[in-house]
Length: 156
Image 1 (cartoon, rainbow, N blue to C red):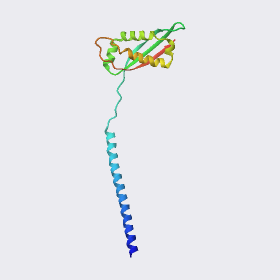
Image 2: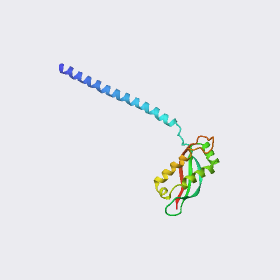
Image 3: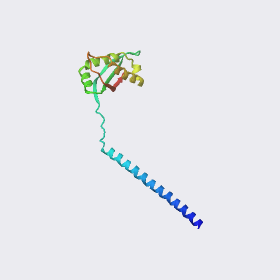
Image 4: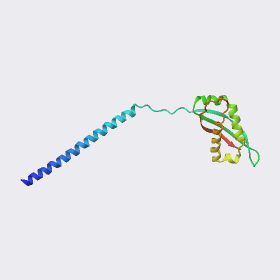
């Protein structure tokens, strides 16, 4: 009888352990399932975010004489400025002769050898952006120029 009681006690303890394991597994399953369902609903309800439409100011292509040790060299360049707002776009369009003049002065001081290299083009992009740090008019609105994009670039 003592052996029978001992085996019943062990069986009862075993059943309690199995019952506790099953109960905790079911509770974890329902907890995780309820949490996942609410996040899925939130994602479905959110509307997709659209990227802002980029604003470009196109500068018509022009030709510039370059400095060179090998005779006459020319740069044919066309570019666009990516701007952050309509106010900057309007301002640059209204002052395009001044913008083109500044670009011409900057580019005419360059040598063909430096503009042929990729590093030279990257440096030129930064120098063009720096041109707009100096005011074109007084007073001048704050300009939001994000990037310089070359559409034509021929060194001859």
